[in-house]
Image (tube, rainbow, N blue to C red; front, side, top):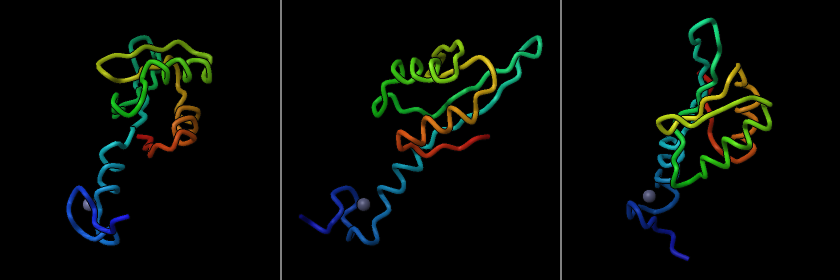
Length: 99
Ligand SMILES: [Zn+2]
């Protein structure tokens, strides 16, 4: 196996490509207050090439026992489910930031 990164050509011990990829893939969770005081949990930053967004929304709806949709590549869940969404995504190995 080569010790040279195929992406940047630097030795792997000083290459930061993987860190950058992980950083770029960072998923954010925010709570949005909608009309009539309704809360929505919005999950943004999902790369559809890395993750089946339909499967994820199904999983989150089940876990949060709540309704949810995909809108403009973001997942929207009814209610404030920040903790459960964070836990679920971290279990899947994603870097998650709660806003
Ligand atoms: Zn590299």
